[in-house]
Length: 87
Image (cartoon, rainbow, N blue to C red; front, side, top):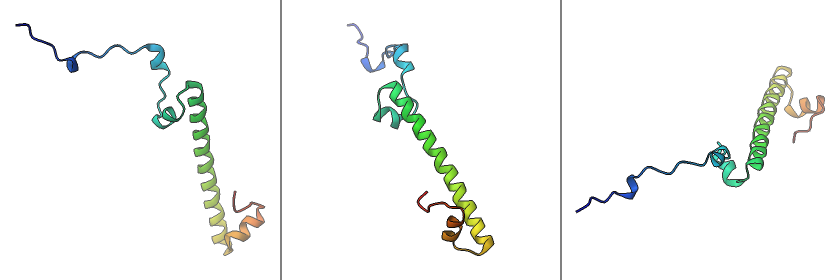
């Protein structure tokens, strides 16, 4: 009687190199935007938004330090530097 090989133990098929090249490293971006060019664009936008948020946080911290040193409200420091509080 021949021994049957369990199909779950077989070696998986080799991946197509073209498809492997299109895999996006960020799983969220790849699930939202499957097209490789659009995925790359979205990843770039996310990276730029993170950089913007980091810079904005640093600016807000510096404005807070200025306000503390001058014993002023943040609102007055924002006005002095002509920055809208929503920025």
